[in-house]
Structures are given as C-alpha cells and as structure tokens.
Length: 361
Length: 273
Image (tube, rainbow over all chains, first blue to last red; front, top):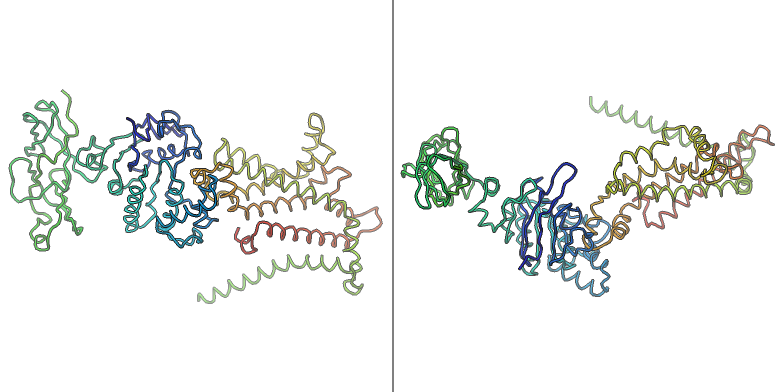
C-alpha cells in the first residue's frame, strides 16, 4: 500500500536558511530513486537526513513503516557512499570493507567470506591488502561501494559518488552501479546534479529546487511532460516561447507566436486573447527552407555548432534565440544544411509542444 | 647573472644555518662538558668525572620525581581536555567555538608571574582552597600547557577529516567506536606531538612554579635556580646543574622512544606530523 521508504513533509533549516521546505516522496522496495537538482537545492541535505547525519526539524522518515527521523545513524541500517569516498586511510581495503561487519559483531569466518564475496562483486579481488592511497579514484569508489553493500543495508544512499571521476569512468561506473543494484535488488536513493546520469540510472527521479520537490516521475515523464518551467529548463535544453491565444477548438489552441500561427495541444480552458507559455525541445525543431504554414517560425541562423552526432543551431527572430538540433546527419547531408546568416523556418509539430502556463481569465 | 644570485642565496643559507647551529650546539656542548668535568672554568684540565652524574639523582631525586609527576599529570590532562574540546569544536557539538578558543589561549597572553599571583588570589579562600597544595601547581601547569596542546590537537583533527566519523557511523559504529577505530589511529602521531609539548612546557616552567609551587613540592627548575644562584648556600654548583639537565634530557628521550614504540610509529612518520 505504501512505499518502503516514505518521506513526509520533511523540513530542515540551517539558521535562517531553509534547506528543506517540506519535501514528500515515497520509494518502492528495490527501486532506484534519484534526487536531482542544482547545487544548493537541498538534495544532499535530504540524503544526509535520511542517513541521520543531519536531523530534520519536522516531518517523517519512514523505513519499512517505522519513523526513523530521530534515530542515530548507526541504528538505521543504511549504507552510505560519499562523494569523496571517505575510506579509512589507516585500514586496508579488506579492513575497510569488513568494518561494518565487525561493529555488528559477526563471526570471523563469515566476515572473511562476505568481504571476499563483495570484493569479487565490485571487481576488486586481489587488492585486499592495499591501502586506500594506493588505489585509483575509481578503485576507491568501488571499495566505498563494497563497504556499503557488504552490510546488506535496507537502503543504499549515494551522494554524487561519481562526480570525482573522469567522464569515461563515470559512464562505466554508473552502468556498474545500476547492474549491482538490480542484481542485488537494492533500494537505492541517489543524489546528483547531472541530469543525464540521473536518467541513465533511475527508475524514478525527484527534481528539486530551493528545498522543494518540483516533480517526481520516470525519466520519460519528466522529459516529455515537465510540470513547470524549472523542470523543463533543468531537464535537457528547451525553448521557452509564448504568445496570445487566437483560436480555440476541442483539445487544441492556436497562438500567435513571433508572427506565426502555432498550434498547441491543451485541455486547458483558454480564452482568446489570453497569454500562453509553452516549450519545445531543440531536437524537435527542424530547420526548413519553406514555410509549412502553421508551426513555422521565421528566423536567421546565427551560429552552427558541429558536435559530431548532433548539429546545434542558434536561430534568431527578433530578440528571441531559438535552439534547434539535427541528429544523425551523413557527410553528404551536412553540406546541404543551412549555414550561418541564412534565413530559415523553424518548424515543429504541435505534439512536441508542452503548454506550461496560461493567463487566468 | 642568475647563477651568481643563486650563489648568494647558498652563501646566505650556509651562514644562517651555521649561525643557528652554533647557537644551539655551543650551549649543549658546554652542558655536556660541565657535567663530566671536575670544576667550572678548568675544562678538561681538571680531569673527567662521573661524580656529578651520579650525584644528580641523589641531590635532585625528589624534585626530579616531582617534576616528572607534575609534567605527566599535566600531559595526560592536556591530552584528554584538548581532544575533547577540539573534537567538540570541530563537530559543532556546542556553540561558541571562538569563545572556547579565546579562553584556552588566554593564559599565553598573561605574564606567568601575574598568572601565578592571580591563581593564588583566586584559590586562597574556600570553597576552592588550593593555595599551598600541589593541586594549584597542576591547575597552573594545565593552563599554560593547554594552548599548545589544544592548538596542536585541533590542527591534527582538522587534517584528519572528521567526516570519517560519519562514514563509520553509517556503517553501524557508535560515535565512540568510530573515533576510537578510525580517527585515533589517524591522529595518534599528532597527539603524541601535542602531549610532548604539554610535557615539556610543564617540565621547563620556572616562573609560574616559582609563584604557586608548595614549599615542600619543589620542581627541578626551582631547585636548579637555587643551586646555581646560591648566595647563602655552600657553593654555586654549575656542574651539578648541568648534570641534572642531562639526566632529565635522558629521561625525556627515553620516554619519547617508549611512546613511539608503544604507538608503533617510526621516526620518519613522526617527522611528517
């Protein structure tokens, strides 16, 4: 009926600064859940409250139905992976991993066996006797992961664990983390500011801003149906456009936007003359040489960025800069694409537009 | 051009090092010389002797024991208090870290003579009548040892990343276990350094002890002063004074060696503190 981890109206302030302004969400058993947001949005504070490193002033943190908000960290049975690894420098890899089992007073043979098991799992077998400073960043993060996994925590919390690794290793490690999480059926809460990382890893993502939850959903939901401007802007890139409503029919409205008739899907009750804000993603904007009537905005190409798999366009109309993207273009096609200074039509389908807000009557 | 300038730097370096070296080595050499020769002023001509070294423990035995006892207690108390306060300040267990810092450091700014006077005045009446007892001496020495011990401990803990305590607690360790098993091994070289500073601060102190040491509980510096500047006594005995210092130095070095052996540190590691 309810999630395995339930957070209700959690509040936390540092003096006058409100870090969490009543955040609520729920995570299913075995789910990979990510807190995503810019730095200072409260995501790390939230994770630290879950771990017990910070104490929330109000609200509830229920794990398996029991409120643990005021429990000491050592009583919560969670695993925590830190951004800066936080390995114990005086201990070897094996001692680091064994630590959580030793303080749980497990018998020696069991500890040895489980340590070896988990080291094999994260691909670190044979490095038992190394000290953390003798390992690379990626290896250190694997030790940190092994150390958190070996205690078979009820929930695994990860605080930007990949942000100190280089780009290539980061992509490798996130596959690894996802594989482990799925294989072991772990319930994980992951913090990151990297939208791509959050999408690659998560079953569901909670987008946060200024201590508040903005939207929770699967990556697809967040991407295709952002609930507000913040989410639309933070998840990928997007064009924010607006205009006045000129026509309304069942499920559709037409707005006058930058001198073009733009058809938008909406169930909202919009009266003619009202202002409408909407977004359309760059990859849905095509650059064409002829107008198609509706949903074609005339603009001048100001910049072309060749990025390999995609080509990015900045096209200007009046004071508005429209972003467009073309994907998977062959070598011959590249030659035929619009160039800087050329006049084009920025075209997009009504179905790709998301209405963000409408003026109230 | 630049090679010439570098030569100047080398020369200056050598001169400074030589000068400093002489300043340190010369008095030490005289100390050793004095403790093994017959008489002041005659050098080796008077002949070598172990008389002073043998006599030192006999004449100064009581004050050496007093000094070592006071220094040891001061060291232990400083270590414990510094660690507790520094840990508290760093983990923000209580507010007002700056105030604590100022309080601990304050005795450094007061002349020890005046500090001694203040201690006497503060503790000569009940409820805390410590004047004339060894307790006041201990309180005084603790006050002057704390600034050094506390600062060293704080710096050591700061360098050790207190965040590791969270990591350990997240794995199920109590805070005490986390500190004992993770932080302590990491900071023990620094704590040894801090303890040694506290120990020698107490051992060396003259002016504060002069004010507050009980008549029957003389420390080595107090008795040394009497011996060397004896006006009414039989004679000023520099040789014996030197021998006592040498004995104390030997005690200190062996204590240091013992601590290093106990904490399993190499000399090399300690140099890195």
